[in-house]
Amino acid sequence: MAVSGLRFLIGTVFKVPATTEHASRAYSTSHVFAEVLELPKRQLTKLVFPLQELQRHLAPDMKLNLHLRVFDPSLEDIAKADDLFTATARHRIEYLSSAVRLDHAPDLLRPEVCFIGRSNVGKSSLIKALFSLSPEVEVRISKKPGHTKKMNFFKVGKYFTMVDMPGYGYRAPEDFVDMVEAYLKERRNLMRTFLLVDSVVGITKTDTIAIEMCEEFALPYVMVLTKIDKSSKGYLLKQVLEIQKFVDTKTQGCFPQLFPVSTVTYAGIHLLRCFIANITGNLKANDSRFN
Ligand code: GDP
Image (tube, rainbow, N blue to C red; front, side, top):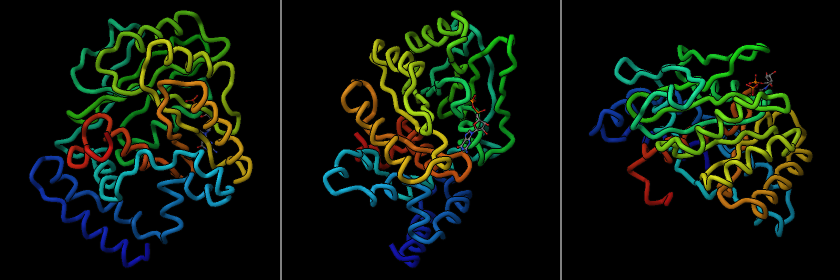
């Protein structure tokens, strides 16, 4: 798409009718994404759909293996989602509470999404990046050895909550596994679990424990590949193809499309925000295209 085409899209973003509170916020704050739209096409594609850029390096028969655009929002939807992640006086995005047990978790009727992954996978960095449009959101991190690890709840206005689950690892105490397991099994408003895998390392034994948990409870989950800026294109492609093969052949509940992200370049962050906005029911205008 030529830059003039992008300018047209910026126009459509700003023409979103202000019929609801959300639409009116979109009208006033989507300048953030409008700046992104100003990028040359190749840079824009790389930022929003990092795998699409990589796919160019694959042989034609291999391209089919990557489910690149199962979730294929318009740039306008991506702008709307960015807007949903931008706090205003009437749309508060904030840390809500922490809990060590499920019965201490806030009892919420709003849709919820959670983030799980082994320690050091890049989970805190990802949650900070998702909230980067609202820098006043305090992403609490409790990593000191011996400190109780907690589930941290964040509310995104009246629309949904995001939960940062404690990181797991070989030395994770059993009560932590119990906490995650109980949450995944019983949390009724949980719409989607985001399972983070380090793209440099690939799927580890520890990751497979979490994958097995999601599979056992028949949860819909999504694999997010972190730290994609750290590898060469060739290495990243190899890792992505391996992980994609795992998802295609060994999982039932995992969304076929992988979500690669970097919190250094912000690649994939806009798309992930948009996916979250969609599965929590906040992109109503275009829902039919995603069903
Ligand atoms: P957590 O333990 O899962 O919360 O992991 P952190 O978010 O603390 O990240 C672990 C380490 O990986 C830190 O040194 C981060 O700076 C680094 N990191 C996280 N995300 C990225 C990324 O996208 N790119 C790069 N290069 N480093 C990252």
